Image 1 (spheres, rainbow, N blue to C red):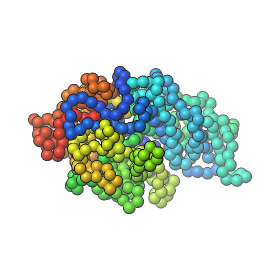
Image 2 (image 1 turned 45 degrees about the vertical axis):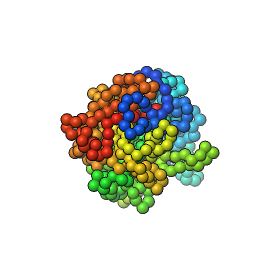
Image 3 (image 1 turned 120 degrees about the horizontal axis):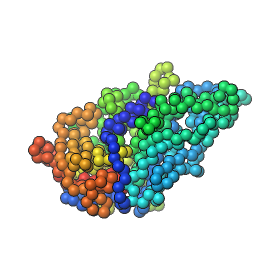
Image 4 (image 1 turned 60 degrees about the vertical axis):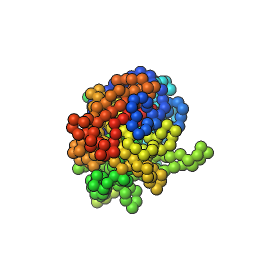
Length: 464
């Protein structure tokens, strides 16, 4: 699990590039962007029903690991705290979360990040993580199993470590934190005291100025591949957790990481793509759907979980959850300004990364006039790639290349004027909400794009 997290973070870093300001001047909240030459229609970004800027979220995932026996320690987490130049965010009324240090668990503590004190700020960047615990419980085997005694937490706590945790309004950022019983032990001379071996924590988490703890955007947008020709659909790679080789039916983008899923008789198979294309991280996909209430029928997000083999299982058949998050249908967050589903046509959207810099993921898709059994518009073609808002260029690749990183059939183009939420021109990447793009003619990209159903027009940025 420890190695897996570094692999995942490395994949995110490779996708998003480096640098980025994340500052910029004020802008208003809300959906969509504006300005420029339109393609088939504009896109409104819908991440909240609030009329004010919605909070973002940090989910701190405490990942524990190794066996379980009497005498094991449980670290009890309650309050998490992050601070930037706009103020402190914390969760003083949060319930207690028990993290069994010797057991392989994924314990998530949720924290809403308000933008009320950071009006107009495109994103908030937290550069430190405070490691703290309410208490430590030591399990006993007398008089009955499950009893415990409370021990004093280590001297010097709480402790603060370098981190990079970017939060956007309406989106979710996850921060994996690895803790286990190699880091926290009972003091031999004072059985009521817990000792802390910091070197073990640093080994597992980085947590240094040169290698800070990395948060990543963990909420995906899903694009179905229902109408994409079978010979243009990527195939999932078999994983050690049992994901079979099968055609993808969805592809997912967050700005930091790619993922794909396929159909199955139970929960759909899901895998996040890593640096090594032969070693994706397998898991399961929970369904999205709708909720009906006083306000009408509203869509709700689905969930995903990434799995690992349980290292304590000698048969290597049992699994543990290594990370989890949410995903949303593209039709619920990319809509017309009226809230209705996008009409048939071609569209382009970009996804900022956790660096919030000039390099963003770019997705160009064509949807036809048909819908799935649940009313989601069918997508008949999809390209993915990157846009560079400093160089004013972009590259797109057929979705089938997403599993291997191949560049066959790639399209290139240039970016023209870019616009803020208010429609003013801007060159600051974190203020861009839309912009004009065109495919190059010199290398045949425009002709290939036209054949694929894509058009020159306006891209829209997936952010409020």
